Length: 157
Length: 157
Image (cartoon, rainbow over all chains, first blue to last red; front, side, top):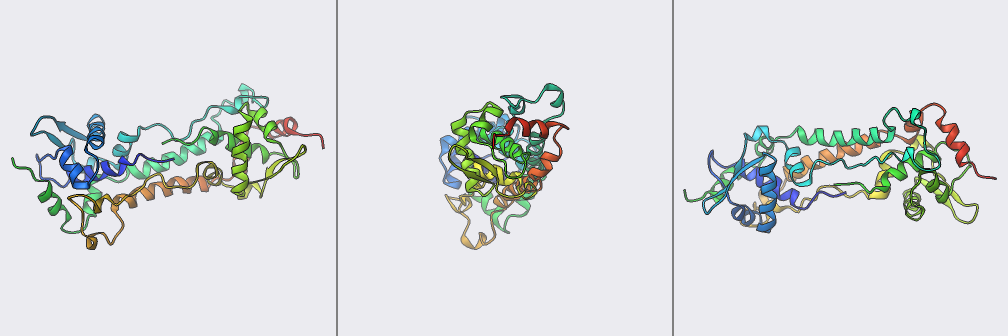
């Protein structure tokens, strides 16, 4: 079970955009160069973040991306789910009701205990990522890094 | 991010084996028929559970599988990791140290804050599955089900 490799890219790209001054944008090409990652694939994932309401993006030569809302209202879960989808890790196909050992319907009125435990573990993962915002991540960056990010990504206006 | 479909099969198969009387085994064919799942693929996954120390298996016409230790010492995490591996969901390739925006090494002495948060979420998932044993699952089965499982899976001795 693996998250897409681009999960790291979009987490960092969103964190970088959160360090820019209000109204400043960065293009997919700038962000790709900043992190040394492939621009076409990063651009596709940034569009997924736009669809998820994490970023807003404008196209054209002066276009670029910025946060769609304040950094303290964007959770790591929103970013991860934008690129990975929000589908459950575990699929219950109700095999307790299949085969020679199929349980009768009256014994299956409650959800399968295994599915319930697997869902609880996923909820713990999601809750953990929902509890961290991009603002929290920016606040824990090494001193001086946000100034450097701003300077490197600043565009001629 | 998806667990293999066979995760459900091995969780149920291990739970079924936990309902058998001491010393009784069930073959891959019996378990596959019990749940209506493909025997070849189930057998492969049961072997993975043997390698993980969850089951012990004997081969031959009277061979079969049983728990390798008491059901209260087998966690759902052990079963899930036996079929999915224990690799992290999130891979940190240290892109903070790549590209035009590469942070200098002295700003990277601490682990990347994003990687730390992603690892914490995975730990929450693992902790949740580690807290549930097969004995817990058996204890929450509908009344009468263990007797039925035992009767259906009993083999001529």
